[in-house]
Length: 58
View 1 (tube, rainbow, N blue to C red):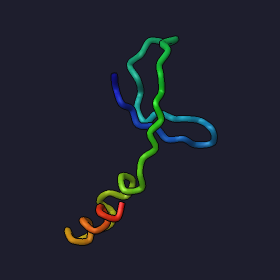
View 2: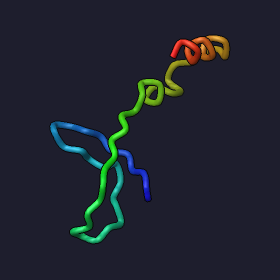
View 3: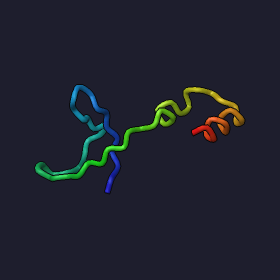
View 4: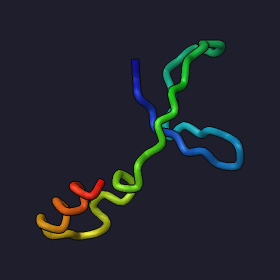
């Protein structure tokens, strides 16, 4: 099993990297939308106390 990131745009799920699969290979897809915290990790600088409070509030 391999986890591959993708982005959904204009009705099409686009993989962020090529897969090493022969043509015609059937696969199952499990959709797990990223949380806003994962999308913004490292962008906003918080002190430890602020981060801990945010985590508690979730």
